[in-house]
Every structure is written in C-alpha cells, then in structure tokens.
Length: 225
Ligand code: AP5
Image (cartoon, rainbow, N blue to C red; front, side, top):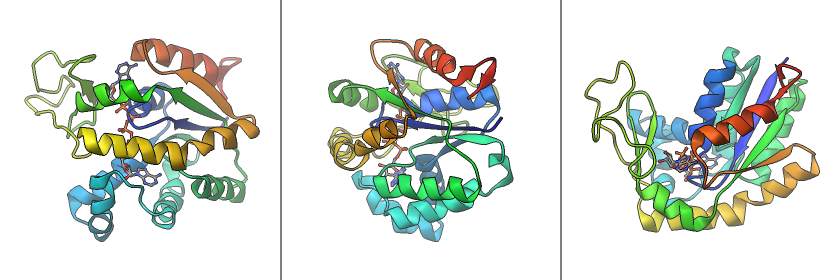
C-alpha cells in the first residue's frame, strides 16, 4: 500500500530526526527540501546561487522555485511506493500544489504528523545542533552528543567532523520562527480540515519516545497507512 507521509513543525521541532528514522523503518525515501537546497548550494549550481541569500537570512525560497524542484523529485522512481516529506509544503500555495501533484498521479496523502514544540525550546536546541556533513546524522550538544566530541559516530564516517548550519545563529533562528508562524502555521488548519493531521508532542520526551508514538500512528493492521 502506498505510504505518503508529511512531517510538519517549526524549525528545530525534530522533523529531520524523526523523518530519517521513519524512512529507514519503512523503506521509503526521506525527502527534505532543506537538504536539497543545501546540496545545491554546496555544489554551486545555478539554483544554489539563486537561493543563497534566502537560506542565510532564514526566509523561504519562492513557492514557484520550490514547487518546480518538488515536481521533479516526486516524479523519480523511488517515490512510486511512497515517501516522507520533511519541510514541504511550507505554505498554503505549496500545499495546494502538492495536492495537485498527488491527484494527477491518482495518489493520496496518508497522514500529516504535526510536531509541537514551543519557541523557547527551539532557540536552545538549534544553537546546540551539529550535523555530519557526510551521512547527515543530526546531533545535539545538550541532548544527543557523539561518543567522541565533534566526530560523527556512524559507520563509515571515521574522523568526519560535525558542522554547525549557517542558519543556526540565534538571530536567524528567531527570523525562521517568525516566518514559520506567519506562513507555515496555517497548514495546521489546512490539514486538520482534510482529516489528515495527527498532533505529536515534540518536547520533554526523547526522540525515541516520539518515534514510538509516530510509529503507532502510521501502522494500521500491521500495514503503514
Ligand atoms: P530546513 O532544513 O527544512 O530547516 P527547518 O524547517 O528550519 O528545520 P530544521 O532542519 O532546522 O529542524 P528539524 O525540525 O528538522 O529539527 P532536527 O531534527 O534537525 O530548511 C532550511 C531553509 O531552507 C529554510 O529556512 C528555507 O530557507 C529553505 N526551505 C526549506 N524548505 C522550503 C520550502 N518548502 N519552501 C521554501 N523554502 C524552504 O532537530 C533539531 C535539533 O533538536 C537537533 O540538534 C536534534 O538532535 C534535537 N532534537 C530532536 N528531537 C529532540 C527531542 N525530542 N528532544 C531534544 N532535542 C531534540
């Protein structure tokens, strides 16, 4: 059965942390628009150059640019049996465009996980986030440290140094939160009206506890919804 899952939440809510686990557990691709944009910037593509200023200042990339990239990505063969979208859609026009994409392919969205975390927690979390530039694993200096300080634990990442994202400075985090509340938060009502939204508390619990709740929401009669 097709598995099309969306994970919504403010910057730093834990979308990437959870989406990576879900993708691994259910064998579906984890599609993060943020990771795709960062990869374009790293490779220095035309798109990468166009989006640099938006990314560094915590603004959203224009909807038309983002949707064009996603139309191409969702048409790739690995998406035929489902996916988990992390960071898309992020505005009502993007959600409408996603609805059009799935309808054109005679598909349907399965569930929208809405992670709930307060703004106060986010600033603490994101200034302490570190990521492996090779495997993408996410760490936190407060909550989830690597075994050796500053080095990724994953197999095949020996001696790879963890990095801090450019947009994880306090000023940019506050800007991203403001953009989230103004532009992305209306999606909570959008998906509630469609009967797809499932709220999950994303703070004061470990990532594993959150993952266990999400897994229960996703599985019905032994199958992913
Ligand atoms: P993107 O990369 O999507 O960033 P974001 O939405 O700001 O979210 P983050 O990746 O910062 O956080 P997350 O929720 O994944 O949290 P994580 O799991 O890492 O987007 C970046 C930029 O790209 C945007 O600003 C925009 O410019 C552009 N963009 C992307 N998509 C776009 C779109 N659709 N349209 C337009 N522009 C777009 O966790 C955070 C930290 O918390 C980690 O350190 C982690 O270890 C820790 N943590 C996780 N869970 C817990 C827990 N339960 N308790 C304690 N700590 C935890």
